[in-house]
Image (tube, rainbow, N blue to C red):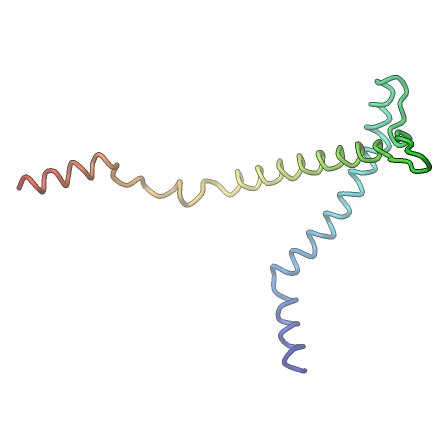
Length: 124
């Protein structure tokens, strides 16, 4: 049992696991901020522009059931905002890291150069 606990402790304390845990916590907090932005600022403005529509109240009544598609629209906008921000962050990180290793390597001879070299060797 002690070996299992030691293995788990070593796994849990690896840098990647701790970084991932921090990212999840920050991501959850960021999601709440985006949801508050969409629910309290963006959707009311969009609703006013569309003639006073309250998106949280939009629903289809099917018998006794209510299908709230307005909440789905708000969740989709939440997702789009989070995806856009993550895209911008990833682009900024990639730009800050500089060119990839593949781009840094010198380009080797082209296929034509290699074929010409083989032709010249065959002539000799």
